[in-house]
Amino acid sequence: MDSKLVEYTEGKSILLVPEESLIYNVPPMQPAFFNPRGVESRDLSIIVYETFYNQVGKSLQFLDILCGIGARGIRVAKETDISKIYLNDINPNAIEIAKKNAEINNVVEKCIFSNDYAEHFLASSRKEGNYFDIIDVDPFGTPTPFIEDVIRTVKRNGMISLTATDTPVLCGIHEKTALRKYYGRSLRTEYCHEIGLRLLYSSLALAATRYDKGIKPIFCHSTRHYLRVYAIVTDGAEEGDKCLEEIGYIGHCSICHDRIKLLENSGVCKNCGQKLQVAGPLWIGKIFEKKFVKAMEDTAKKLDYKKYLKMINLAYMEADGPISYHLVSGICDRLQIMTPAIEKVVEKLREKGYFATRTILNSRGIRTNAPVKVIEEILLKLAKI
Ligand SMILES: [Zn+2]
Image (tube, rainbow, N blue to C red; front, top):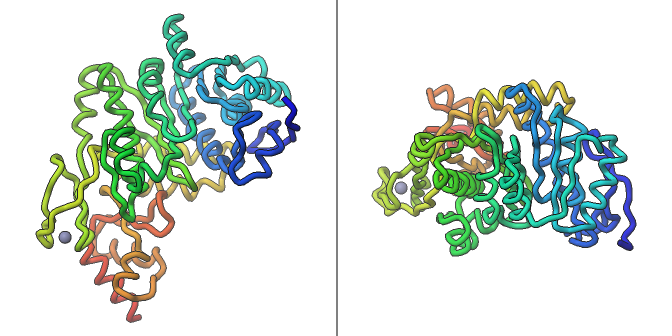
């Protein structure tokens, strides 16, 4: 390995990373991959995992199945109370660096390293009867090839976290690829990131039901170039049945921009009679677990990650909200008026008795059950003030 390693501080850990990964916009795969722009994903995952540890209240086994240089796994070892961390990667250079990172962060005793294919590592673990409380999958592109093995190797009521970096596929640009990878149709809409997250959840759910298991989404976000979901895997055929009830479609009207949950893959807009564009099959149930997200706030304070409190609070506020969000700027562009402060629009919608809140998924978005017509009326009124 000729590449020079440099010290890089992330969170409360010091990581040795290939120098090139800090120089180029797209970090190179060799000698090992590290993306400094994944910091928010890793910070938030520390908050989620520590919250999960607090709720479970026992020693946990965490598996970073595609660990790279160990950025997430080593940070979990250093910054959370999780006692045993498995780090696996097929790149031997990555594992060599991950081991050094365990040493400089004084977490060698907590870490177990493996240089193997993810699928093989997971199958071998099952053969040995070794199951994990939390499994993280953070691949290049789609996580779907790993989902089934991960579902089979997580403990009952354990947690799976998935990152997807094939955002154009999940967000409606490459429609056929979405059908192949996620068995669902995406749509290029203003809330396409939510559609992408819901496709990720349905992929996880449908893999779970094959093994008489179910999933419970707890937290998700869409940041920069990636989408990320967290879910608890529940056990039992009944759990699988419940899960299937949460799989459906979103109907989107291209004329009046209204959207509704559908159980069938076709429908007509109730406002204007237009045939709806349809996304799915995808997850139409809740995408945040309110109590868990509330507990994340306490963890963020305890771990001194206060800069994420605003994001976490947004997820808390919208947890019980309707499907999809509206882009205020998008509606204003259509109406050819100036975009007002989003807080003002939220306030006016609430005054009229509607559910309304901002969303973690888009800084210009509002999640509301108000019809588009009502939002438009409010925006037009605000534009006249
Ligand atoms: Zn319509």
